[in-house]
Image (cartoon, rainbow, N blue to C red):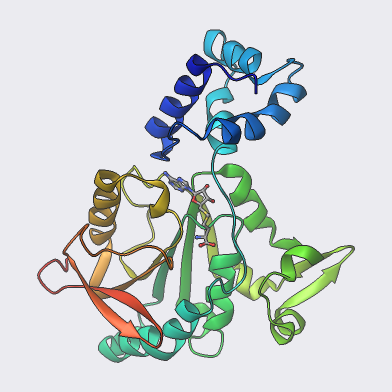
Length: 276
Ligand SMILES: C[S@@+](CC[C@H](N)C(=O)[O-])C[C@H]1O[C@@H](n2cnc3c(N)ncnc32)[C@H](O)[C@@H]1O
């Protein structure tokens, strides 16, 4: 391991300020392994030399590249299954029941920290038989431009489609293009991919009925989790739902949400007190 304490603390501080991702001491291996390919591509012998270059004479976008490299973009289709069952069986019927105006107002979903697009496209596929395509607007956001570009392209390798995509969904919604699978254009047009940092004000496209904010709060400290959850509340319709990752909760962080048990899991609903 060649990383100096100074290099690690510079990178950890940069990543925390720009993304809120916490890189605690002990994560030196992560910094080393994620930055080494960038160091080599830029002609440096090691990560220390690369980071020194970035610090002293940063080229445009160089700091963003370092931050992006330290994001974890792990995702899959219908990840954890349960939230998507809850979406179809409980959340959308509730929202549509409350809003009989759905004919005039599209169902607006925010897939925050969407990585390479499997989450928003899973939402679109899950709702294909429930909401007419013209009535579904999904805003999919992430910090990483690289991930957003993948989502916009809507093309996935065999290895990627093998991760959670049921065969009937593959047959129904994808076309084979060379070695890849391309998602159907009517699903693609329901999703807009927009760059957004969860530390900033929420993106345009709201107010939202449903927010997926899954497997990202785990990287943040308590104060940031609270701040992000409060910011999300500001762009929700009254009675809107929030779906978190399996290891995440609002409990003990922000009391503006009611936990609603659904099946073997839970979803969260904006309490009337906090609704806009
Ligand atoms: C582990 S993935 C989760 C993807 C998807 N939500 C899921 O559950 O499968 C976490 C994503 O959060 C994004 N991310 C990390 N920090 C962020 C921030 N401050 N603002 C927006 N996105 C962020 C990363 O780029 C990454 O794509």
